[in-house]
Amino acid sequence: MTIAENPVRNGVDTATLFATIDAVKGDPDIAKFRFRATNTWMSGTHNRSTIHGFHGAKQEMNHREPFTLDADHPPVLVGTDNGPTPVEYVLHALATCLMAGMANIAAARGIKLNSVNVAIEGDIDLRGILGISDKVRNGYENIRVTFDVDADAPPEKIRDLVAQSRDRSAVFDVVTRGVPVTITTKGA
Amino acid sequence: MTIAENPVRNGVDTATLFATIDAVKGDPDIAKFRFRATNTWMSGTHNRSTIHGFHGAKQEMNHREPFTLDADHPPVLVGTDNGPTPVEYVLHALATCLMAGMANIAAARGIKLNSVNVAIEGDIDLRGILGISDKVRNGYENIRVTFDVDADAPPEKIRDLVAQSRDRSAVFDVVTRGVPVTITTKGA
Image 1 (spheres, rainbow over the protein chains, first blue to last red):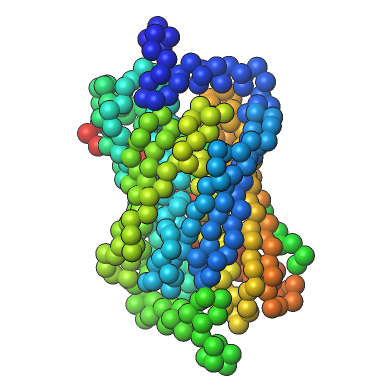
Image 2 (image 1 turned 30 degrees about the vertical axis):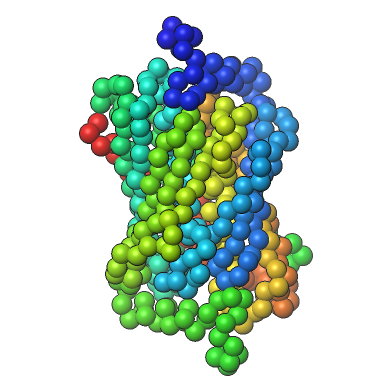
């Protein structure tokens, strides 16, 4: 077995990956995760999130450090450009989820990746969020992702990798199918 | 008019905000934006996005600097914790979009914000992405957002602000309603 002989591939510890899948099969509660972020308004469209703790594998855990992320609008959208826009973070979230899947799935299949790059773009008509037209949605009309993969595998295997990354992507599922979101306000 | 007397409120230049809306009403093509990101695989589930250029207001533009964002999985998910997970970036994107809306809408309505904090969390059963159960979706089952607002306004006005931020949020629309995503692979 190639996998047993060479357990770390593409930087993925495949032995631990398979052990994790086996552990979840034995106890589905291990798979129940709750992720969190907090966000604080700074000024105008500039605000800052902190991501640190999460629940998973039946325990509270922390990332090794609190991650801080700034977001803002650029001047053309009446902001001060202190960070990417919220909608650019959506593109990033989708690209990074597909990319993590590529690395894991290639490793599991014994395919060595040499380089992988993704370009992603989305079209949005801001008449929606500006309240100018009720016929225009607020969000992206469409999103396009282009993979550029150099791997020790023929084109059809690379296509299969990309397809499986899509089929096992949490963010692809969220972005294409939607999720129920509840918003509440403390004391109001 | 309060707005004319005090055009900058909550750090929002309301005069420019209203001028932007008027400009778009006069020429809808100004509102057509295309946002972009590129992502490069580093090792394992660690990868890095760059966000710099975008198209909008009928021209190519750049943020004042290229923004670089790392993503990874934590050790419990067989990663090396070099950044937030892709699904945490989704929470961040949603929180920051709602927050930017709050600031703009409060400014437009003449409401002074003293502080705004958002807590956001999402539940996900990883049996989906691990390929263990076809009955479990890959993405979040649900997302909850809690606003904590201190503003110079009565509770019902604050509730209205939060509701309008939701109703004009690009990322809320994407996350709750979904977007068509096309994935292609160069040369494969």
